[in-house]
Length: 377
Image (cartoon, rainbow, N blue to C red; front, side, top):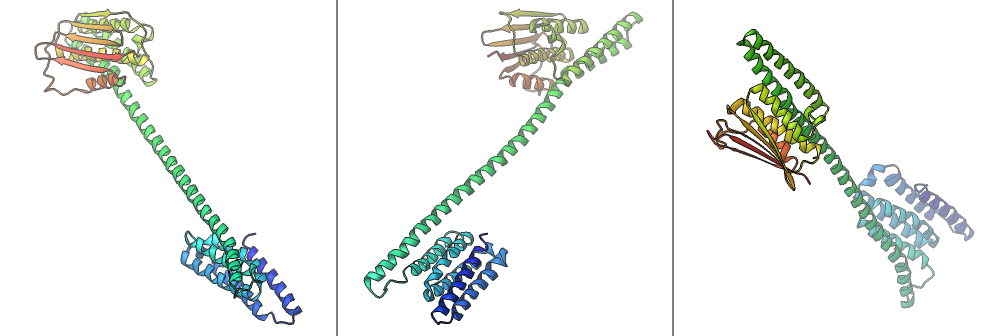
């Protein structure tokens, strides 16, 4: 509709010019030639070559030439001022800022000239009124062009911000997904270490003991290994489904620690004393699991490295935190010279993931103590 408007206006004005010229006994040939030039100018530079509309210099030539043709038409016949809306349309559509402002001002001058055709421009009064008419056309339309430019810039800025926000949102989703995958991998690694690895270690030690045992002891070691295999399989399945460890399924943390310590003591023939201080109270599931796994890992390390004769496990319910201490009277080690293994790293990740702290104290010949503290609020 807007693309046909300039041609429609021009055709109607050309027809009206023919009628007016003939009624006055004049030839419309020059006017028709100018109308044909204007139509050909618009057709070639705008309609037939839409790709040229993105070329600022070509469009500046196009609008400037059209303004010149309109100005000649208006000078010859003031009613061609009705063709100036087409000039405004092209100036707003194809000229970038600030060239658009110059194009709109040029069309406004042509429109003001057409509207002032009856004024005598050779007098000061006539010239003053002419300038007033031109200003009345130019100022509002140039102001509108400026306002439209500001609106366009705000819209572009809004779209840019929305695009940046969308890209940031997508990036955050990707990062969150990657973090979730990494966290799940770490969880599975810790669970495998705390269940399968510890269980397999116990099974291997029992089978090795069975190799050198008499028939009666052999059956006991094999039965113990079989039981460890069943327990490890059950714990592995619970780990896959992110369920609570079996000792915590039906018991509180203190009771679960006692059960784990008794099983460990029966397996390794090392006495363990479990003590609970303070008023026992329910804890978040994550805290109970972390403390239980810390105790299991600490006992596993005692069996592997400490050569201890006794172990003490203390669970302390304090006012703002719960503390777990596991101490043995084994050989100890130099913490400055020995790097932490995966078990200790996994234990630390569990505790610090709950804003807790893990402290390892040990000296050669003086045993080892592990203290894990988790806030309860």
